[in-house]
Image (cartoon, rainbow, N blue to C red; front, side):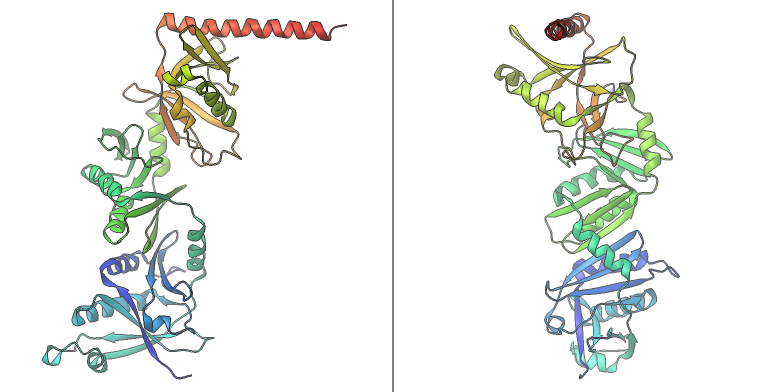
Length: 440
């Protein structure tokens, strides 16, 4: 088979800074001190993966005609040193030629072998008559041919895992507004934006402070990041033509993706940050509830037109017979709620006013499989009361928090407790009647 050199064109505007960032992520003498180029001719794509586990970066390129026509092209990897050397030379050539792309020259190959790449050193090349003659420049440049290796297995696994991930889609403008609010708080170790309260919680030198914002943005859930993570988000925004950014927080990793690239970052200090945040909450009560029946009881109350028009109910929380109660003119609607693991004495009650619609819209990541859900009633540092809901992945701080109002008015409190006493008497009467029927 006759050898043929084909150029892989990489958009300089969007990819050059990302390639340089990828090169800085590489760790010398590590097992993943390399960069993989993975071709998918059917999808017309080349994916470039590099970095150091678990902080890999991926750049997705559309294939130019020369590469697309070469059906025998095999995926390959370059050592970190070779990648750095090629990138520096490719950027020099791009500046010399005033092209819109940097180029990786790939030497033709057989189907069962990885290709070679050509690195052109153009430092000593000068242009005659200022003509951008590519062939003339390359003919006069120092030429190195380097054999490539197979792609790294960890890089291939990274591609596979990314395909299976679910991301949250957020508009680029929303991300820009978020960064604009965060930047004045630099330097910091960790930061969280909570959409429900519009607050930023910032950890600096081991201490957590709170800052109010005017951001009216719906992220679906809170955004937690380190300062490098915010910088990574800014980098992705600047180097994409997309209108939306995709974000996923996966345990202690922040993953940000666009159509051109994907990057992961370890959130070092996340556990400390969560603990510091937990320490700032004044927890009034913690309990577990079967979340599906709870949402069903909320929905049942909202079926009454008079209740739905007010959209308000009271959650009476106590060791026995916790319940939801909605009081409207001349009517009282009650729904029992089964709770367990209640962290308060048997003689105490807590009553909170809730707005039904937000509770009906409560987002549960795995409603089918999740049964008992941890819930807490707490006050923040401004003495505002919330019900916090926890998922399995994040068990120390609420995944979602909904505003409630603590009932402190004694007359109102006693009136609601009297509802419970009526329910208790009714249950006792029904129990006696049932026993009388079964007794011969």
